[in-house]
Length: 342
Length: 178
Image (cartoon, rainbow over all chains, first blue to last red; front, side, top):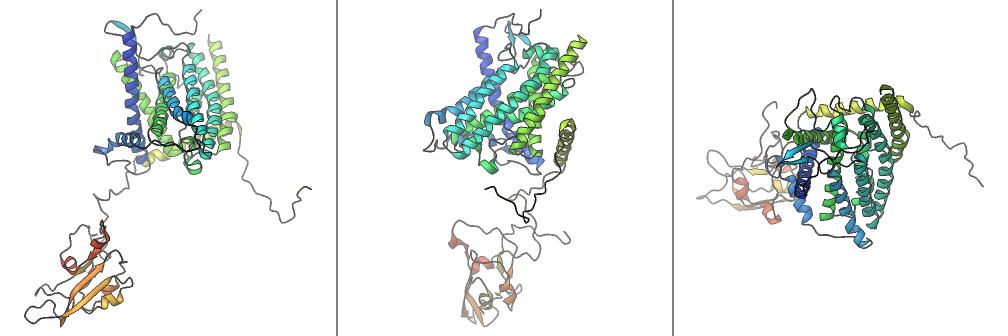
């Protein structure tokens, strides 16, 4: 019987694991400023304006200027804040975001310096559940941050975040069941390999749409940015944060966007696979994955430029009354089709 | 005791009930795609921003900017005779004129008298152009320069020398028919 586990029939030396960790962390850290800049530039173009173009050529220095500005600011906190939780919360967020980054596969197992190396942080046998687990920890970062700020806006924001993340995690998980049933494995590399014939975005189209909608909610991106809804909550859970701690939250948010884009790439867009039977050499694979991730990021920005923020009851009814039944139906239909075709 | 609504309580008219079910989901999906298409169309519209310090919107010929004092082109004498009509017309009271008698050997203006001191306080000026209308000799006109900010207030008091000097043309003028 074919157990739904990752096939780990090789052992990487410890130094390779260290190198991999460093490389993945650096790739993540490099992608975030890129996404930051891309967001502001592309959003500007969608709104018929330039976006930031003053720092450096074409505004390329903007993210680094932002980061320097934030890091050199004074660290302050409200008198009502609960000190150590207030400090810990953004750290939790960024740790969870980096943890989730480890799972995105950039390529298959290749031969580097004579050792078999997988082009991914880890290939856990529980695959997507790992991301959900880290998503749940990241949600503690939001919750604790909002609650320990000792401010009403922060508290409201974190309560919204709690309800929103819990609601949409369900739909997101159910949407993935279709993929897992089709691929018959939970290992992400296995899921990518299973998409050799056809990317899952075609047979699992409904699942893909549900996953994307739920992802927007999970990453607190517009149109689901109710947790920070600036018009009503002045900033939600990050109201009382400034300087480096705010930068951590900011980084975590964009890292989450990258992780979710990576997940969507892996699960629905065939990871490092290219369509029409193009089979490039192994060193191209990571670039294919990064290109797909960036394409998703652009889509995120595009949606941000398009859709207005949902009202809170609309958010809840969309999550529980539409996405959850639809994703359950999708999982059931997929299961039935797989059994019938088997 | 429960509240009893009287006749003048207006019943709230609500919009049509939102359709539920798969049809609504399908329709919402279509509408979302339509919205995405609309925003994507904006990408090809180009940028409407004017990058201000680098590019400027040309002003119209009658634009009322920084004042200018004029000289006669042939003799080089100042047109201003120090009559103070501009100062009288000025609603913001920002013009100060001190007149003096012309010396026959060393004429400053074409008239009997000339403006020994002519100051306009640009931080008070409202650019109404009344001074220009009041002037009987067309000695003062409104120019086109609007970039007048400075780091302190005393530097915004323009003296006669500054107003007489040919202005640094920093403002493009709108061409005929533009």
